[in-house]
Amino acid sequence: MSLTLVIKIGTSSLTNPETGNLALSTVALLVEVLSTLRQQGYRVILVSSGAVGVGCTRLQRKERPRDIALKQAIAAVGQGRLMRMYDDLFSILKQPIAQVLLTRRDLQERVSYLNAYDAFQELFDLGVIPIVNENDTVAVDELTRKFGDNDALAALVASLVEADWLFLLTDVDRLYSADPRTDPDAEPIARVRNPAELTDVEVTNNSAWGTGGMSSKISAARIATGSGVRTVITQGKYPNYIHQILEGKPIGTQFDPAPRTLNARKRWIANGLIPTGKILLDPGAVGAICDRGKSLLAVGISGISGRFQASDAIMLCDREGNEVARGIVNYASDELTLIKGHRSDEIEAILGYEGSDTVVHRDNLVLS
Ligand SMILES: Nc1ncnc2c1ncn2[C@@H]1O[C@H](COP(=O)(O)OP(=O)(O)O)[C@@H](O)[C@H]1O
Ligand SMILES: N[C@@H](CCC(=O)OP(=O)(O)O)C(=O)O
Image (cartoon, rainbow, N blue to C red; front, side, top):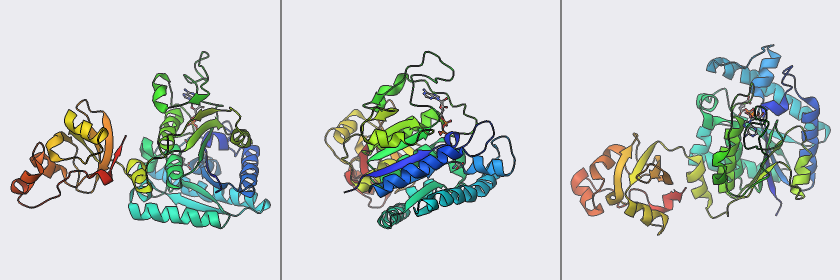
């Protein structure tokens, strides 16, 4: 079975920071490396930022716009030019490509999530390299909310297609203990066995053109490694490092993957869904869920936060508010306020109708 690679390149690597023009040699080398990998039998997805940056250059704007509608309009200008450039370069090497524009919502809804999965499989079978970006023109959230950056999108796509590797190409050679541009004592980090080790790492998000900065790459690495995807942060200027990393060279910052224990549906619950509320559990319920793999019952609920409907995604938290699991809830927040702390056989009398015995069934629950 051939290995699946997801490669994400950020605006800061694709464009020259002084002029805003495309970094042509970087892009050309990236196209060559990805085409070679495809010929070697790897299944390859490119997640490319740059629509806003390229659109700004086309419209001769010197600064990244802040206004959402303007940003969306500029992304629409830039995305076409970006794809045209990729198509021209990949065509020279006879490598077919496809444009796949996704929104966070597409990965949140089960049907479109599965449709995206099927489309990627067909594209792989056709020998095509899909080039993914956020559908910025319609996705307001994606441009405003932190979670909507392309690092997160790349991690979600890597989880969706069960990739073996995720490469986050950026304008520094690896992750450091602090921003190497501002802290001369910043120590390089070569290997991360568990992203939880990174609590002391300082990140600054002051990039002129990038969206997420280093913190979004760490969050992306957490999502991807949690789904069993080996993740590397490395320098976009040298795309041929990808070959060397695949050969085992210790380049960049490499994050070990967690064992792949979740099935596809549970990975979607863990990563695709966006929780709309929190349920606080008493210690007995935390033990039942985390240690004994049980469903959540109303009797173990001590509090509810946020407003949500039945079938929404929610976080399950301990008494201190730390997330212990995520899941799809069987009751709305208003109903849970009435039945929390009660036994399942009391629910019908309290609500006046028969509901589910479980608040979150274990099949719809994933430990965090
Ligand atoms: N701890 C850190 N280690 C490495 N780089 C960091 C760190 N904290 C902040 N950075 C900054 O993050 C930048 C990369 O993020 P960003 O500009 O958003 O890239 P991209 O466009 O590739 O997504 C680097 O240029 C670097 O200055
Ligand atoms: N979708 C946007 C990019 C968003 C983004 O995450 O940018 P970056 O931090 O440069 O990877 C665009 O194409 O301009």
